[in-house]
Image (cartoon, rainbow, N blue to C red; front, side, top):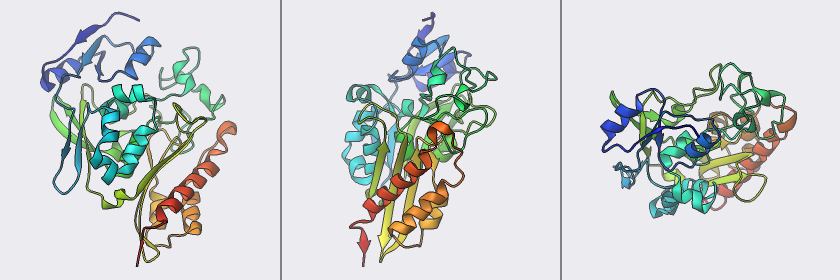
Length: 330
């Protein structure tokens, strides 16, 4: 590991001032950054430890939403009674990720910023545009079982690794960030970027900007929600496909639906095409499957991940079917 400076700022102003300097990186739980530093992928000149800043609470918002500080630990958020009651998909997503020990360290803000687990990104002997812009992408014709099938480009097919972010995308969450120009709020749908020709630019953050909170808006439909994750083993594995879904049904008709996918795109994928087909239609197996297949109709598969559209469609259908049971109002 190469030498670096360590700074623990006294307040947010100092944090963003130091982080605006070239080569600076924020440190929260460290569950991703430290690994990347050990692998020589991240080589910061300065590590800015923000764990002393006052962003570790979950607070009520007017109307029934929640403001989640960026330093709230994943385990604490998953256990919060308000989250488990109002947004069960969030708690389920958190509990499906990593191990209990890592959840005790990992922060909400860090979860938003974690980088891909594509094996070529971690392998210095492989070409990776995300790690070294312009180098190429060995995943295109290599081992691509875990790679993305939606929103990809010829520059990058790496899938986004987060479980929490999929639930946040489904809920239309907002990310609060602080920089030298002040505070701004970024819709979750716009926070992560598709690769295009610049897969190394992964978020909408400007240099030195710090994630300070995530806001969950009031969403009564989210009380009837699920996060379903399909993976190669039962624990400590990233999603091949995951689904965050919330559903409201009245008199056999879908009156509200939220749907987002993980493991299939370079960012959390909001399934707007499927939502549009479902809304106002029948809450039955045929409609669920038709909407799922429409969402995946433009999937760009390769030899190793050709199973993903079928798996994703089946997972969406099963999740919606589960949510539709017992929620129909007469």
